[in-house]
Amino acid sequence: MWCKQTFPSFGQPNTIMSLEYVTVETGETPVGCVVWLHGLGADAHDFEPIIPMLKLETPLRFVFPNAPMRSVAINNGMEMRAWYDVDSNSPLASDADIRASVASVAEIIGNQDLVRAAANRIVLAGFSQGGVIALELGLSHQQRLGGIMALSTYIHDHERLAERIGLANVETPIFMAHGLLDPLIPVTRGATARAALRSLNYAVEWREYSMGHQVCPEEVIDIGNWLNAIFASGQGT
Image (cartoon, rainbow, N blue to C red; front, side, top):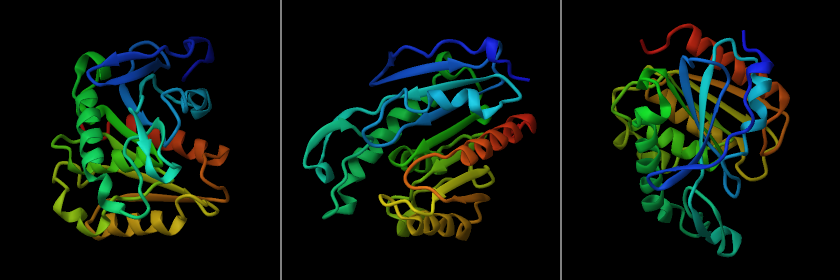
């Protein structure tokens, strides 16, 4: 069992290639790695505080990358950390940004010095914008991953999703969760993503919560249970 005394102090930013990142290990000799992408305007420290709440049964290594700083049209051009620009007048204008972010995160999950785990022992996770990148990369990645976690998010250009996916992760477990009261990304967008995935025979575990665009305690429990199941079962091996 995970022991609170072994939990290290919060990580300090490091840099690999084009992205800064923070790493946290929950114990000695982690059995897998979770690469977790934050949402628009947040940073690599955003999800660190929930790690002790997950009640992990095996030690894991968490890698939290920082998105680049960029101007975001939907926020009046303000510069902030974002995986891609968002322009409500041109939804597909973010294509190039998304491809660049997918490539940057792919470098991270392929770097053995950083993740210290084979691909099938890596869970790719993301919240909001980060979830878009997690899905885009996870569904097209050429190696089998341990799991994909997509929180309060959607699929970019879902109508052409079938053109972008690969075969390696068709059977990879996907955990999706959304707030019923989400004012930023309505739950209907999440449900549309779920339907698109299931139509392509992906195994999606779906959860809804009475919350807005956030993470709630009940969701944290469900995330912890899902991660424990992934790594206890040796998923992907």
